[in-house]
Image (cartoon, rainbow, N blue to C red):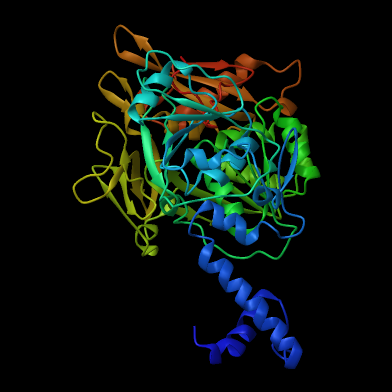
Length: 507
């Protein structure tokens, strides 16, 4: 940078960031402002390099913290100690499986392992240990970092164990060489073995704009687990912007998490549509006073967007499209379901298209590949990721129809469950629903809907059979006959996976 241009650039930075007024920034004040500008530029330049440098740039900001249900760790403590008991350098160049019970322990270990380990494999808490040997062999794991005892069977690989703690011990960070660490995320594995998706810090953060946030009142939170893509995005966002982060815990209820988030002053919070439907059912939802709400991971319906707007009139509500393989593609801010067709061309950093009815994405946020000799191909020959999400264009706007592999076949006619769910969700007494197929010897399958009602709208003397007929009538008025549910079943709750999505294959 040209040193002569520093004062003028400092004035511009001061004006934008509110550090000092450019009108009064003369003499000593200008020198102070220039110093702050240099510090600001250092943060901007190094925060996107790796996780450690991001924390180093913003970790000593006063009042910043990472919190879960069991306690709080100051952001500066990520830099002043070791959660690996000072053994981090022993893991240099290794393929490390990170399998901890608490998210905060995971975040502490990531700060030490990034740029040190060759690979970090994030083990999600809901993944069965029956897949452990497969993951160890596929990722050539030679080290396990965990705060619990983990045994691996039926694997011929020698694997060393490194304990991990949520309380950092004093230690000096020693790194002999810098590695461009691969971050490997695992798919859920609900239909078989998980896929191992290979990312780097650069691909994971391609959609995040690093910036120094001098406002300590900005506190991020998420319903996601940070061992999944959606939660990891929020962890990295907090690190790259120097904001505090409130993490959920598997042991606490939705009501307790919302109450704790409110006490911590959460201003920005993300989750799946299913997360938010459950949250709005809780009386603790009114304790939260968010400025920004983000939804991703599932198709959103208009009823949910309207309910969120009613519950949080002062919040900016955004729904985004992102996936583990494709990365973050776009976000929608107009309060409507679907996305404008113009979104396909608006971001020069993300190329999108629709081919054979499914959304395809190519960007720096794409994962590199699936890991493994027999792994499927992640990208086509032109570098695009086929998301598997089907979309339909109507009046200049694309609407998500559902997953290509989630279609219910009713006598040779296709039914996307999400389309039926969006209709059922319009009923004023429906909180959430799940549409799935039920085997039938004549048609192959029937459409069935499980429905959770809003508790406040269900007095004891309410005729539930009449309510079921109302929902069916709504479907008949809006859908072709083969898409109308053959049965409406009222249930108290729906199964939600650790990923935050409704478990569609439980029936």
